Image (cartoon, rainbow over all chains, first blue to last red):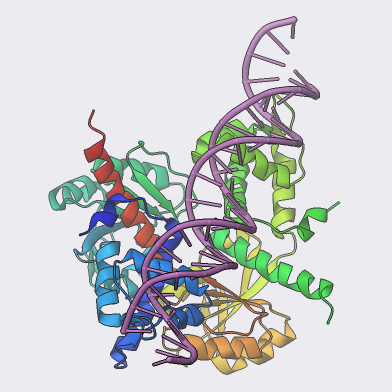
Length: 220
Length: 220
DNA sequence: TAGATTGTTAATCGATTAACAATC
DNA sequence: TAGATTGTTAATCGATTAACAATC
C-alpha cells in the first residue's frame, strides 16, 4: 500500500507538500471538508496541474467537481513525508540562530522534535533554552548513540563547523542540516542539507532586479 | 560588457555562486592566486562541468592547466550577483528568528545590510538589536519610501504575516523574503521568496530515509 | 443533463551530464 | 612535448506544462 516510498521522489514536490499541509490544516480548522486542486493552486499561485500531480502522489483519490477530502489528504501527506513517527533530532550550537530554532514552533507541527542541544559555552551548559536542555559538546557521541538520533541541526560558527560535523558522523548521525556557510566533508553515506541564506537572498535580489528591467522593456 | 544581465539566469546557479564566493575568499586569504574548476567541484562535491559552466557566466576566462584567477573571479561573481552596490533592506518582526537574523554576520559579506528593523512591541521600540534600531510598525511606509528600500525580510508571526505584507507593498517594497509559513498574496509585480524551513527539513528526512532503503537493496 | 474537476498520457522546457577539440 | 584543464556543442535526464478522455 505504501509502495511509493521505494520510488524516487522529486525534491520540488517534497518542498511543496509541507506548504499544502499548512494551508489545509487551516481550512480544516475553519470547518471546511473538501478542497479542489484548483483552489489550492490559486492560493499558492502554482499551476493547477502541478498541484493535482503532487496530491496524486499521496494516493488520495479526488472526486470530480468536489475535490479531495481534506482530513484524508492531511493524513496521507504526513504519512508520505514521514511525519507520523516523530523525528527526534539534536541541535549543536546555541548562538542566536540556534536559540531561535530551538524556539521555532513550526517544527513540532512538522513532525520534528529537538530533544537536546549542545554548546561548548559552560555558562549555557545545564540550562534550558525554550525548554530544551543544553549539554556540553563532548556528550554528543554518548547521547546520539544511546537515543539512536539520526539527524542533527548544525548552527555553530563557520570555523567550528567541520570539526563538529566530524563528531556527529562519529556519533552515528546520518543527516546534517547545515546552517553554516562551510562546505562539509563527510563520508558518502551521510547526507548534508545546506541551508544557504546567501543563496536564497541572491535569488530574491536577482528576481527583483529582472522585474525592473522587464518593466523597462515591456512598455504599455 | 555586462550583457548577461539581460539574459535569464537559472536559479540553481544563483544558489551556487555564493557558495563559490565564500570558498574562494578563504583561499585568497591563504595566499592562493589561481584555482581550477576541478578543485572547486571536488570541494563541494559538484560535477566539474557544472562548476566550469557556472564560472563561465561571470565572463572570467580561465587558463588551461592553471585555472582561474581568484581575485578576478570574486570581483565578477559579486558584480554578477549585484553585491557591488550594497542592498539596503529592512526587517519586520524582532522575535527570536528576527533577532538572530539581525545578528547574522554572513549578510554583510553578501552585499546585504539591514538598516532598520520594525516591531509592534513598545518595549523593543527605540532600542537596538545587534546594532540595528527598532522602530514601530507604523513607521514602515515613511522609512521605506524615504530611503527607497526595495527588499524586506519578514519574520513576524504567521497570523500577522499577510497584514504586514500589505503594509510593505503599500510602502513600495518590491521583494519580500518570507520566513513565515503563511502564503502571501501580493500584486503581480511584487516578488515573494519563500524560506520554507519545513520544506528543507522534509527533503533532508527523505534523503536519510531513502539512504537506508538503498543500503537494504544494495547488499555487498 | 451540463460542466467543473479529476487522472493520465504526451509535449515542452530547462538543467545537468557527456563528449571532444582547443590550448597553455 | 605531454597532459591537464578549459570552452563549447550535443545528449540525457527530469520537472513542468499541455491536452483530453473519464467522471461525479
